[in-house]
Length: 268
Image (cartoon, rainbow, N blue to C red; front, side, top):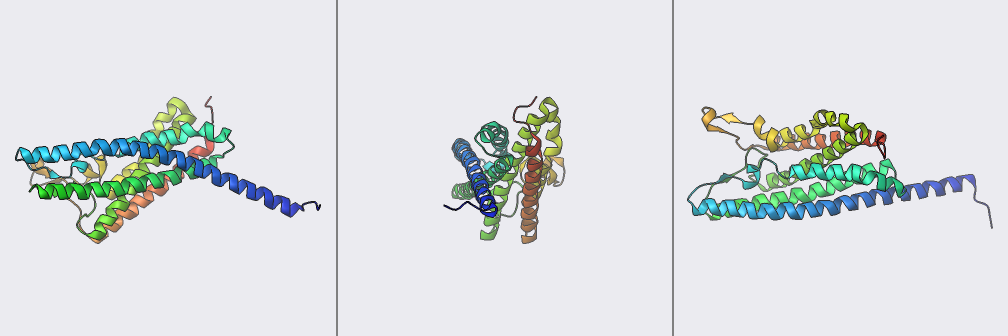
């Protein structure tokens, strides 16, 4: 039986550390995906009842809904993502570290989980919008997006799916940042909500959705009594929107990385 060399021992330790990191990332991502699925089932179940009810109700009373029922909620899918991000970062921190994980694997797992949850919500959102449009059209009603990126071609529909995915991913990561900030600075951490909201504001502006996105694109035609948020047009607008949304995700991830490196397991 030969004694392992220093190089072999170092390689073995590196392999073990790498395997532990991969397990940690997968474990956190799996928990976040599971929570995202639960939130998604509740959210989209309620949305389905709301969207069908309000569309059919307006048709029966002779009214025209005119805009997307989903857009009329001004980005309601964002808010449960903030809660999910807080639970995903702070709620798992002590458990993850006590199980032998690292802050780096926690960060990797949260980001990976956020991307998967975001992709799922993005696809479902796009399908919901297509379903809304088909239902409204079949009932003889007009339908359009409230602001948002172009939605008038197969390429634009695909772009919307990507944009909505990036929106949800950003908000989930922002929630994780807020949770990490409060865990680190306790009551003073609430003050971090303002600077940590920058990625959320950026993704809203880029995709022309949510409260900020809609407010920023209001047009007075011809006066305040006829204010509206017209839908976007053009390939350049779509590409710029996707680029800005991707930048928001990167910014939120960088902020989360910085905060997770310093947050204590048990704040003093």
